[in-house]
Length: 203
Image (cartoon, rainbow, N blue to C red; front, side, top):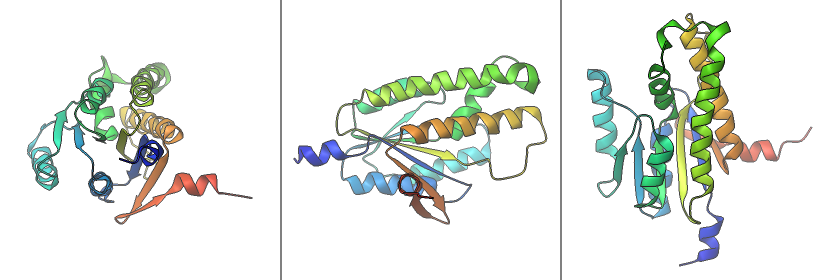
């Protein structure tokens, strides 16, 4: 085993894009190409028939040897668990996790942006910081691939909770991107490493 190559592997990879942009497929391809053991952390819950169908399709597309951990809320603990059984971890996805987390909070259905949204910003970012602390403590050679949506390019949501959700997810994505070694933006199934482009940008 080449330990030098192993040490060079990115510890955190972010894959983001719009709906049906190929995020999950791309993340799974990265994991397969690594040739290492993979664990899949699924944040979705079967809340309705459409979600059950989506979950079933995703499960059918995964390699049979992958271990799946279903965890809608406790991401830090899920990553620690996954790292005990695999080298490449896929977390799919932050978008669903944030929805789960917001609706688990008291008064989530009565959000007033000017009085309560800061509570959600702070709480969600604390959860994210706990996740990033776990990632930074992973053994050399372990990699976490995080899938998330870019929701800031569409129309402004018409209701308060939707606006809070969009804003908090934007902050979450920014914080993960800052910590990640690779940040792939998905466009029509194609991944572009925008972190490298950003680092090489000049005026």
